[in-house]
Length: 531
Image 1 (cartoon, rainbow, N blue to C red):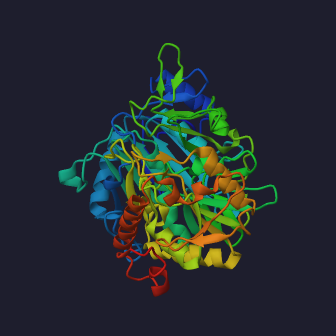
Image 2: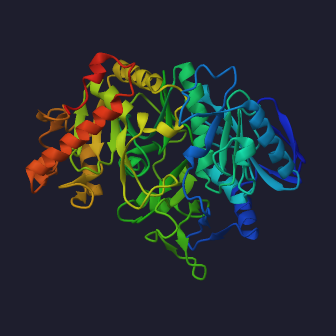
């Protein structure tokens, strides 16, 4: 292993040497924060958090991601808009120019792990141009307790250079920005973006390729566990409430975003949390509020340069403001982040149509149907190009941008786990009621919390259910502490006929989207809404 300040960084499975002007290896968070402040990369906020901005890119750039087409993986990859192919010679050319670019630069290296399960511990090396990017990764992934580089060779290397641009005409990229994945060499190249989430999601994408080949389900979701050891999973896109709803004072937090499910149970891929901060309130999200302190990294949260006070309500830079912090900053965190087989699985959807109930129970076929559909809305700023208003969308497996294998691979594995361990599956709407976006109102967070707690605590097990006439799932007619009319979305609309029209519109969108899945069994296809 190279010593500190070594001019050589071995990268990828082949240990390809990259020469640099200086390399800082595995610095502790405090030292990295000092570097970031001294270099003018970020400010220390009044609560001690490191506040950075990401420039023109305040979200992921999924259209700029490419996967190298090579013999070991080309027959498995789900090629298309999500996994755009790139020729290996073009990858080599970009890597060669990046190496030349790195030769005159002072870089930061962190050796860490993805995977809290000892069986699936995945060594990762991340090389960054920015010190704050390195502390971001150090806080989000799992760092060895002795703070020394791990003995094993890294199974994945990510090189992140915001100052390096691609040449689309030469490199075959869509723009100057790129995220290039070489699955055989276990090497990811990121250029021309300062959005740190690209590194986090690159690790997740590679695990989405490798783990299903071992029978492990990779999942874009959060997880917690109750006092009786009853684990729960929460699937959902950014903005649907994964982080907020899993951070429950009455339950231990396993993780807030990415997990695996193997023969022993569920385990966190990461060692940190990545919470949205827009309109953050201590009274509504005390765990997240208190976690934002020295050691936390803030992205695009507006900070007064004189007073260093944070304004969580200011979305002038982006609505996608973020905080990255170790999961240990959460008072009731479960460390290591492992749990048993989940008793409950929750699909979180933010329904902009305002027609889905706050909670519904799914049977086995409906579970596969809604998992493959992944209906929700994209919240402003999560990806480049989104407008200010939420947009209805279907994100396959609640993680469409990160899938590498065909979607039915993940759906089949998840269905097998759920059936084997008899998990109860719920569809929870954290979106609108009483009308669509712009007319109705978003379901209040305390209401959603109360409904989910009732489901996880078993208080809905014996409650009478009604079958929804359009969507077919079972809807509770009562929930402790919740007015019954909230559970029936049609009753919350002033004009029931307008509700019916919107419900039929959404059902038609489901059917149109699901037409792409020609290889699913007939009973799964029939589990969708009656359009």
